[in-house]
Length: 291
Image (cartoon, rainbow, N blue to C red; front, side, top):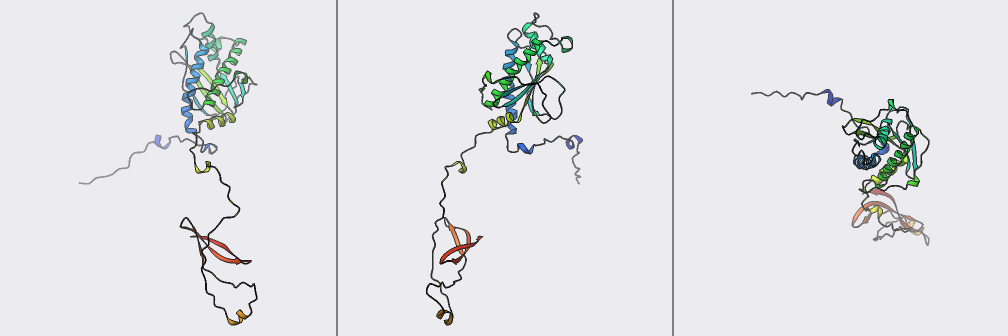
């Protein structure tokens, strides 16, 4: 009886499986905790969105999965608002479909009617004011989650710190937080977008970093002395000299003596070896070599 082993069939899907490209600038940073941060931020923004909808049409709008990622391509021209703070600057954009739905939830007399579409309603100053107030509330929530990190409770900044800057779209490579808004029937209504600058991202990653355990580097430092105290064990040596060299010796002259390698021991362990030489009447260690 013979057996024939065949190689496992390979699929093009395995060969073309996408690989995550790591940014060298973020090596050692807690990028793996961004998923947990997105989950907590989703809950925070959901509460803020329910407050914007109000009790009259509670449950009419809800958020989908919140994602924070690098902006790989340019965004279409749209209205962006910037909100500077002590932690950095965050840009905000809301699709008109989301703004019109919020206006309908607040002022429409038909509580369960369909939401208006942007191509049927002209833009008004009321819509612009709603966009600014919505951006302040949502950006304040995002900053509160950045300050809190992975803690349960938010750390909301004061309202006085929020201000609207000049509209400008984020550039390629910026950190973009995308929050999709769905209706009751799970239809995608539009998006709320948040652009985080590098200062905000640094603050976020610093707050996501777990506290380091106490290590030897964090122990109280002890000032080292200017000179290390060494214990030398000396022994008598014999040196044979010719009679003529002995007769030539003068008072105070040092007789050159060649010694073997000395062992430098720390806690009964030989750390390295060194040569013992004389320098101006003193014994010195030089030519250090590892054991």
